[in-house]
Image (cartoon, rainbow, N blue to C red; front, top):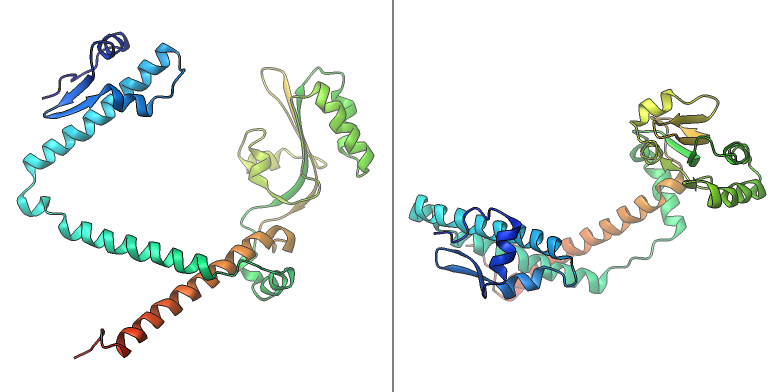
Length: 275
């Protein structure tokens, strides 16, 4: 039985919420107003609060209805989840102890020399599947008098010109972002337009990508440097990935050592015997 089977309108829910402590019932299970108070933030407008209440009640009721049908339709053996629960419990306990053991012993320091050594030995792992770019991006009203001034300075390699571009953009542009000092995945730039990166690169002429939308917003990107798909990513771009790889390998080594040590101890103590 569902007391609120359809929850027809926000007005009905709002009225019902004011009518008592129990706000919904499925079979013998009841949902109380206090349960909703725990999940709905205070201070929301009435309409928003009621909408969230409707969503929560429907989700709560759906889960219980499904559970009821499953209890009715599944066989006794199909409903027996004892083994799955025990397997999950064992897996969870094992995972939690591994994390405790690793966190107490893991060395997370990785020097630049380690990073460079790994990079030089495994360059095949850092072949680019997409281009990398260094770029400057501007979003501005197409008829803004500052557009051409900023555009001119975006092409410069002089720091003062770039600072001036940023200053002009602050007061007249919608957005100005520069990745002049670091490589980024080309998809990060494509999201600014927004379009598929292959379409964006096809439109690039003389290191410039320009687009004006139907609302009169001009988007410009200057791309002074680009690395093509198939090239080896530069060390500075790959450094963080390499640090993560090294630390991950240390984690796995600690876990493998832990497993072997526990097994050896169990043999020595007579807890593990192969007959």
